[in-house]
Image (cartoon, rainbow, N blue to C red):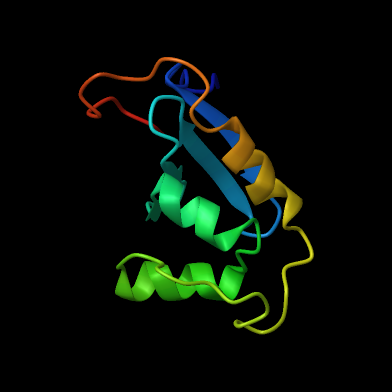
Length: 105
């Protein structure tokens, strides 16, 4: 069985903390998680790579935007924060889709 081709306008990274693949828009830096949760580039900068699975589940449940993030505020700090830092550094590096309507996953 062959894997579906990925959208070239996104960089794909596996997050150990979230236990899933993240798609980072090369144009905007916005992140779409495999489970459908979306983070703006500004949210990624605010969390500074400290996103935990628990806080991700809260965002998935209630939505909204992360406007402030205190390290360790959701069951301690994240042991695998490097994955999200890599995502933030990957963001905004290259051309992306023009209309935001391309399939990501």
